[in-house]
Image 1 (cartoon, rainbow, N blue to C red):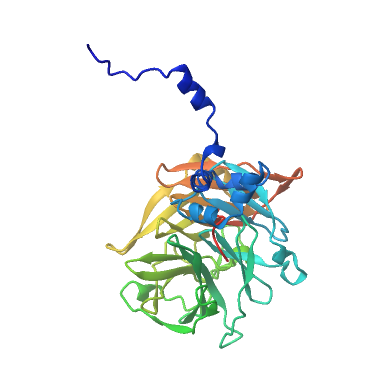
Image 2: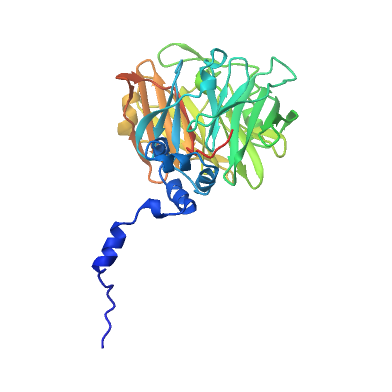
Length: 406
């Protein structure tokens, strides 16, 4: 008899068995593993399905199952002046969402706190008094860090970065870089020890390229803009992004990057305890807006500039071998040209191969998502809350993880 290679159609009894299958038939371990693969936005609805789902959402073993998910599509935590609620852009569902604002941030002493860094599933806030609060925006859990003990109260803060490891969701570090070039120092908070480590000085690393871009900020260059206004080369950052900085870990070396007040990129090698400056992308007398991002473990620069009656928005990467900047992406001119003359400031954040860009000026407020792999640039819709459009200044990217612990 010839045997058919085709799969036999199920008998009626098999159909009945399949139709009667339910998640309730799974044991707790398998049940929680299935739930852990749901999009994070679904977690807010788990508790309202039934008692079993509500119990699973609060269990320790469910959080452990969630921690085994390799990655989640990023959420972008939005920042605006005097915003007393938490608003995110969900890249997986391509839409805006409101989430519960942590109770600790609603206290009078913390209401003016602003987000300054994010990593993993956590967001770090800085209070008016200079202390820090770490929060999981998904669960609303919060923790106030021990107060800082700076050696000098007058030290200027240049960078605030946060780092965490996928292998250890309950551990994170916060790094502060402070001082005036060339006298820089850094201080690290380690959640494992729940304390600030000793302060370390950073020495200048001298090489051929860094000698050409000494921005010790002792002098400020003034020049005339095309509109006839006197402009200072010293950068004026938005308060919501004044600590614009990123951290990378390459070949076992942790490097923090930030923008100096004159617009150069400063790299602080925490492992070797030294710093150096990258060559400028544009001359000091050019008008432009610049920001730095981290994408897939690399530092990139996003630059908005005007040239020949047109505006360009480009992404640059530093070629270490040839010691020069190379363009890796550019917005189509048809999109960026409409911003000509409006002089927007850009505030950017990276997430994997995506860059979320906020553009702000008195005449403009818009948001663009750039995909570096496809060089696709998409302008996002406005965010409306209770019928009112909210204008955001900047954003921070994080992975929405309920297992991230403060």
